[in-house]
Length: 110
Picture 1 (tube, rainbow, N blue to C red):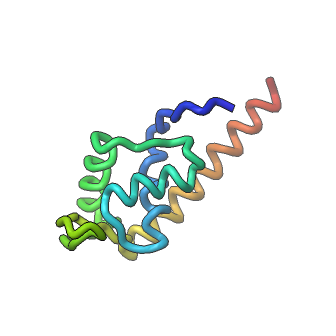
Picture 2 (tube, rainbow, N blue to C red):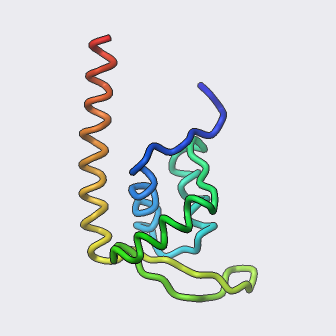
């Protein structure tokens, strides 16, 4: 297996962020680490991709944010999943299921 981080497919980042926030509120670096953890290190999300996505998702109403202190007493913006965000997670999870099924079918046919 390739040990190099993989570039995220467009649309996958939303699913990974929403999935990360199911466990509770966290700041941007925590979300990035959680994504790396849940994907077994396959995906590494850099700030240049993460923060625009968080901002867009907050505008959509899928997440909300607040300022707080991190474990090392630094000011950090924390994000939490909203009720519409939980619904969107269901939508994204179903979409990903259809995509992965289609990919599996295509690979079997080849």
